[in-house]
Image (cartoon, rainbow, N blue to C red):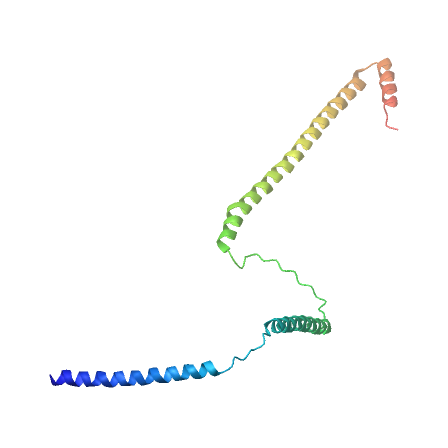
Length: 174
């Protein structure tokens, strides 16, 4: 029972504190009601205009700054000595993707290149062989004509010899 009495006492104290707080809040509300309202002018539109103007100035300044920076860089690059030597690089091996490079080069380009070289060699050799064969045929035929001519000169009569000489003179290259 003692505990309940102590608890009731504490609750009474808490009620008194709450009542005091309520009285003070009521008084403060009355005082607030007596204060006249202060009208604060609305400057949001003019502030937005000022902010827009500042952004435009900032953007213009940054563009101008960038342009000035580019001009200074360009002038510095123009002042650098120009090299008169030109470099040309032929890379026999790639810097990246080596697997695909080797697959293409050793799997396709080199074998097909060798096929084309061999085919060209065979074609040129065959063309020359055909030319030599025709030349040999012409030489054989001309040798045959010479032997026939000499045979006729040895075994022919005067009339045949005269007609042979006349034919020879008519066919001489002029």
